[in-house]
Length: 156
Image (cartoon, rainbow, N blue to C red; front, side, top):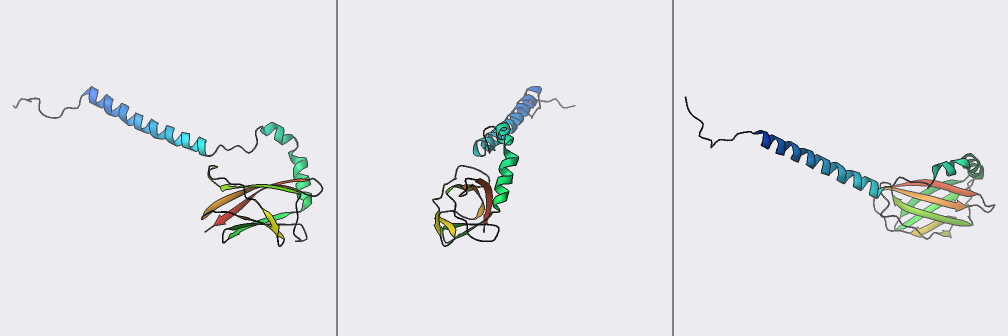
């Protein structure tokens, strides 16, 4: 029989423990990094207090639907166009409008275009590339009715 001279590789309990702890540490670090980035780039909040917002939701929805507005967005040659039309297809002029344009997946590149009513539509210069974009529109009709809508814009 040959005797082991101690120069070969031996798996000891200490080595197994170090490998196990290191593996779990790498997995935990990756999970924490991904969770942090997910929460910090997309908060997921539409309103500060959902209970308060829900109290008047049905009434506000009915008022908004009664307007009969349809909103279509397009982007050509650096100009973002929002065409707001009534139930008969006529262009709508609003008394007040705020819009936030941003990527569908994060809020860090959000911008607030300065829209001007030209030729029956609202137009604003914006610098955006291909992808899925959301326009969070808030407008007010001449009678004071609030209009809120998320308009999806997909650019190739």
